[in-house]
Image (cartoon, rainbow, N blue to C red):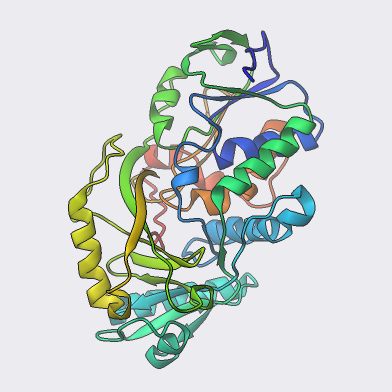
Length: 385
């Protein structure tokens, strides 16, 4: 059913991925009315539904740990609270480390995570092999593991949030492209779209890899660039893949986790493609085969069933942009998550709600404002994949 563009809204959210739908839900739950979400395609069709679906708290930045932990709580309760089965698999996250410098850094990260109530711990190489027996331990020096980390189906999360938001009066306008944000001085007046104009005083940019263009419309520089990443899903395997943790070879960023009766695998390309290019490159399969042979040779004979490419939304320091524009208070942004956006979506939705309502979020996100780049205060997140 085609939904017409309303003439006005209290707040317009640009982007119908996990950030946009979660923010819409939490705003509506808090009593905000006349919320409109604008999505140029279908809900979740951007980066969210091309994500690997990992959920973790193993980060090097305290804010990311807390955002991950808060979101994990929501995902664990999701079926009860939203009536949607996410196919949640709590198998843990296992980082494989092949040099002493990374091992020392992960030890510090684990100490920070544990100080914030997480179950992370360092493992020996033999302990890592016991958890993920398909790996080769050649060259490994240590590993890090959190048994509470998990993975789930991103499409289901988007659907659950959107359905709950609709019941609370949120309007979702799909197949509608934002072409301009109308503002003068410090005030937003409206949003121009391919379906007409909508008057509003507040806009949330949750447009993922496409956020830089949205920011330019409001005169806000959001340094977000796309990075193509490939994912492949294998044919069924002859063992229970759900017993394997989400396993990541940290140096190469090759990873795998269970997916239905097979495995989902991902890895970078030989050379980064930082364009809005979703074409799959056949050469990537050769690269994947090399990485499998190097770190998981027991999976070398597993057939590939299907695959796709998606876009990371990257910032210069691989950390998110969350905040309110300094010169335009009605413009809120939540973008640039550099590969860990889906897992932080629910928590960031709560933060966006609080920024709009003018109250303190559960976690201090001031250090993630875009102004940090003006001050040359990079906030580097180490644990990106």
